[in-house]
Image (cartoon, rainbow, N blue to C red; front, side, top):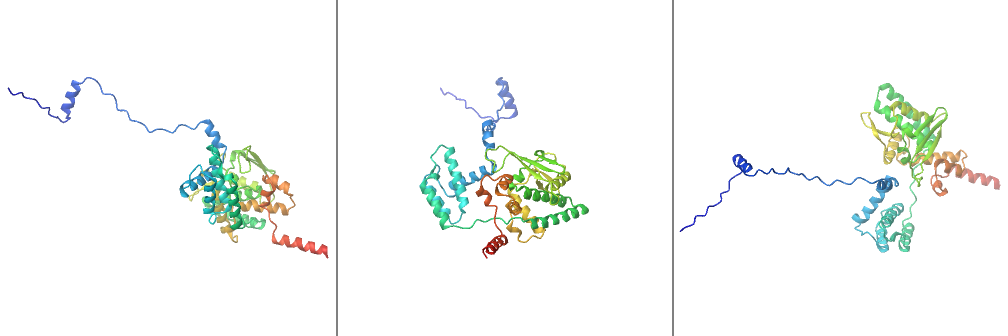
Length: 356
């Protein structure tokens, strides 16, 4: 007797077959569940305060230094004093001594944050750094101070340019020149750094007509404890920073947010403030337009150095100047002060006259 085995024939899932299967299986199928990509957990309050305790520029520069050590130089972290010494030696001829110090500070911070011994503080690393300073000694590159005569020249050019833009209806030029005038005069008379200028906010600035203005900064480079500070600036009979600030605010109608902002080519005022690194090209472009000699010799430090020189020449003592600008030690102040060749010659000649 031959037994016949029935073979199972595969049937494509046609519409009819699908209906048949549904009839045979009364259980409903569960809906498809689509998995979502994992989301980053929200930042805790502790993390927020830790982040606020450090300046953005410091955080970025430290991250860049660690990345340079690990990725570009192929160094390993945690590191050793011998590896740190080799790292310094490999970059001694191509990097400024201040850059090497900044890299060491970042690597020191990394070891401290991760609970490892700090190799950057070893005698070996200090000796290597001292040797680099001796072999590759170069004078510090300092920006040319913005002297009062140049300030007057640029301000006069800006005044004419603002009137020209107003008469021709050039909104972009009107905004740019009015902003730059306020930025330059306030930066000079207050001795502000670039990061202080770009962090000024309208709601934290108060003007007293005929007297002056006050600016509150919640953080600055010299304010290590982040206590905040109020800066005062007087109204002047000419080259007045208060009048220039009022002109800028009246033109823009700003009531809050960054004081100095980006302006696009169509004359639209941005919501974000200028970046500190953008002040150098802004000033150099302005000085070029105003016909200043060697505009590339100036930087955002020029305003601070120019004011310091003017104040000393006007009879301010060093303590008074330090308190006004915000310097914490004499060494920092002296980096911004220098005796011009003419003054130096006059002092020598005065001494020679007394000796005769």
